[in-house]
Length: 494
Image (cartoon, rainbow, N blue to C red; front, side, top):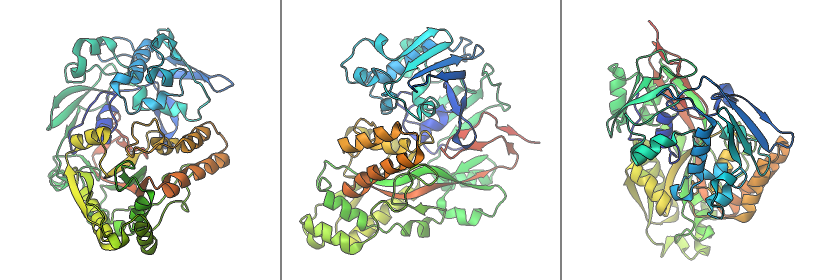
């Protein structure tokens, strides 16, 4: 298969991109995992209990769970890993997902120094307890996500930042890291000690071919068994290929969007942000790509509690021009040059950026320059100094609307907009504790209006479809609505 680019990292503390997640999710396993339809099922924890108040979990680990070097997976491995996630010097962008654990947020902020006071404890080799400050409806889903994976402290202490390199990385999942030829390929080999059983193949070769047309040619030449539209299958080819028996299509809980740095002029003025959104016609997108893209103005994808098709700013050139004039730029006069950054992973990224550039220049008469950046450099820039405008995609990490909505809370490491809003934070927190679907939706409606209309923090573009080609002799391949590629059951049919 083709990854399309080099994974920026395989350290669970640092992983926040789909490429790295694809590799890591096939080497590592946590307490729980996602089963059919996004349902949480046991994994390294064979079962768990929850107290009546919804704030105390006890996880019971399998006695046959082993690391790839033969050592048992223990409750202490999770304690070590979560302490590292919450250590502020590590700067984990997903640390906020653990903040509902007792004292976790205080520890991350540096106000608590003793990790023994954190609300998770290894009470025995196979028993882990977790105390929450509030009941959280989706906490089991977080326990199936990469931020909650265990780690081997002894291996990290020995190898430091190189502990994820081939020959160093000890895994607890279906595969081990046999080779990492940087910028070229990764080779995974079946783990004979995996508790669910060794995968029935000789290994997985993950190439890093940035050009989708090249990967399509390799697939046609039987050099690849699987290619997909995130990295390897040109969207423009989908219309030609979709009638073939090896073509597959799936909608995902993922949304493509354009973000603004709300602290950088001229986008520190909400009227400018609203004008840019009103000046963008999303119907251009499916006409250009013709791959099943569904335009969307709201932030929660269809199929999740809180989706509301009536929320969000829509195409309105007259309103856009009026707002831009109110901000001091009538008909675009005096508007400064601005840059739209995008990653150079696929031609579709470039085309999407060109669509935005054309519409803003045509409809608002404002200058927009495009800046194409390599993926790892792009992610680093977003973390350190987000550009004025940037294009990204977001796939939910767990099948709950909170995975969309908490991305823009003040503590989120994935909130590149620099926007902080206490009322929004409170609405998202309250919704997380609400079990009634109708009441949750009402809270998310309020939060989305604040995020997308009143403050116009960013612009959702379309619900992401996934088209892929899979050789007919490959069985056991799984791709779910969370965009997780599961290879543990992959085998070749005769």
